[in-house]
Amino acid sequence: MQKFKQYITEAAGKNLHMTHLEDAVLDGGVTGTRNVINYLRAIRDMLSGNASAPVSLTTKWDGAPAIFAGVDPSDG
Image (cartoon, rainbow, N blue to C red; front, side, top):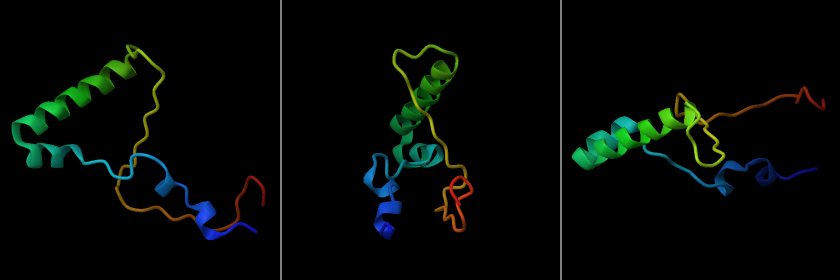
């Protein structure tokens, strides 16, 4: 039987918190706004196929923690 901490992998990875774009604009002023524009341009370029290396993009839309409970359908 696995321990609870073995199920929790998010805390062990990178990118534990990412500032929301609107917060970067409000908190960072002109510099924060420029960073957001550059970030959005980079995503646009990546999605149009102009990436220089393999990329992975993930999004959590609501920002709230997610908890899953129940039987795993892949292995019962």
